[in-house]
Length: 638
Image (cartoon, rainbow, N blue to C red; front, top):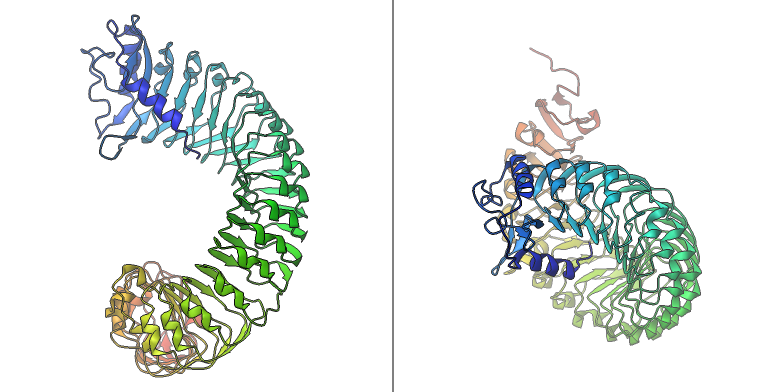
């Protein structure tokens, strides 16, 4: 949600402004005491000072009154607020009392972020004809928005986000909200169409309806919101086309329509969005070409169009958008060459054109992008052959060229780069893994899988102290695993998260003390399948409390499955098939709480399969003549 600091400042002003008044009006005092009675738990003592025998205007925290009438104008007991030292997070549970509707002079109602305030919103709140600000977000409220809210014609801000509210938003609700500038209904369960009466809220500057179940079309009347600066309709089920009228919103700075079911083309009227800075249209079903008029957005900073069905050539007019920081066009159907005009985007930091049908070469004009940090051209038929030498002039942190037709050896200029993420997988690279890779000390993610490398892993890999994710599967690598597993790191950031060395020719055994190495503490996935590895499964793997995936199939492992593996409480997948394992299946392993996939087929295991809760198919146990018990046939009793 777009944070509006004027709201915070205003609320704080109203909370702490010292109103001088007579005693609190009895009607208002009784209404507040009724509300306190509906609160079932107040561990943070937010209402501690609300006592029947004291004056609510002068002694009750969170209450402000007008002078000299003593009428309550502000009720502010939010669960999240700031003190001079740090934010304070509090909560209380209960319901909203209908008696709050008797506070006929109320201007501000802030009961936000109380977490467990539940039940329906009382329709009686619709009687608060003087109310300017209502903040009820981040609670546990349910039910619809009361139709009676159409009487709140003085409202300037209405925030009901992050509750469990549902139902259709009444079309009459927006008819009288001519003063409303901020509307937040996100993170609920509202359904049905967005009412066309939306266009009557002519003062609206912020509209946030994201993460609901709204359906239907975006009303054409949205173009009447001439003061709007922020629109977020993302993560709904909105269908149809983007209305041309959107192009008339000249003050709009942020437009998020991602995660819907929008179809059709991006309207050519988009060039009317002269204040637009952020545009997200991703995760829809948009088709057609990007209109050349998109090159007329003078202050645009981010274009996010990924995961659509957009096609045609990327318009060269995008090169006019010199304020752009980010382009995300991945997973569409763009064709043709990468426009050379992209080299004019002097402020560009991220460029993602992956998973399209673009062909090469990469225009050399991109070497002018001295602010570029993130480049992803993966899975395009670029037929690169090699990475252009001018890439060394860039200051990249992430380089992803998977599936782009690379051949030959890795370029040695990478050794002096600052790259932290390198993905050159699914190419035809060959030769040895170069020892100079040990100089890439910023590397945290490395994927060289599905290539033709045929050496051992150089000892210099131990120098990659920040490396957390390494994927070398499906190469012709040989030798032992020590350069990976015996890495040391003084930094928690350098502890492994995932390792995939499967489908290679590694020999030797898995180090017995692998689970004792601190760099393995946070390992979530280890895949060593289909190598000629021997020896036993190390007992120390049971010490890896974050390990979720362990795949060791297709090796030459022997000995028993260690029962200590049952101490790796996060395990979801254990694949040990096609080895030479013997002995019985430890019940501690088969009954791990989160186990979903378990396969020990084609080994030499024996004995009764331990009782287990997980649904494991027969295929997970076959090929072990000595095994019996469900789901295999029952054991024979002698």
